[in-house]
Image (cartoon, rainbow, N blue to C red; front, side, top):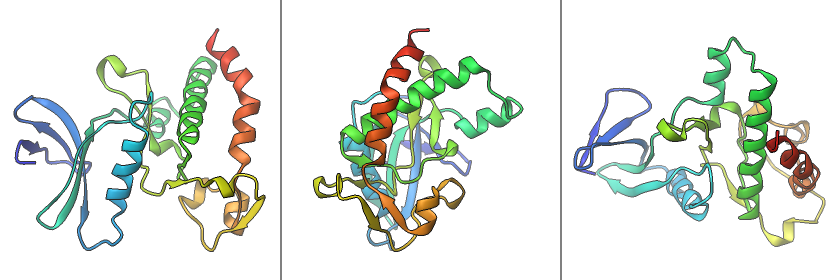
Length: 197
């Protein structure tokens, strides 16, 4: 941690002064129990190696903060959408959809459910990875248990994630645990066809 030089911005980019490499830092006060940041770092580690998954460089407790250092990424899809006048070309939509579907298929293949899918939580890469979409903000993610897969509907006591992007069932407190599996199976053929164009 002592090798990092914090920049003065709210999203906490930093530079490793030994390697001159730019990274991002996420902080959480130690008093939060259980630590959402530690949980998020664990989820990133469980997904490591997958395309579009940021690499966690360090997780530790420093003074009164839990600290996660990870890859510095570019703008979110929401930022890009606003920059483009809230319109994407068909080609851009198809390229993004292909990557988004692949990212969700990957995290679900690792038995992880994001639970806060929204444009702000998908970021573009930097430099030579500038056209790659990354999945971020996994603090609310959960592990899908084998028993949940085909049990049908389960009662959820409160809304998880961002209300604006939650499904109707999410607002009603009803979750369907196997819905993404069927969605991904139906979109696989389309996703593959779209990537060939």
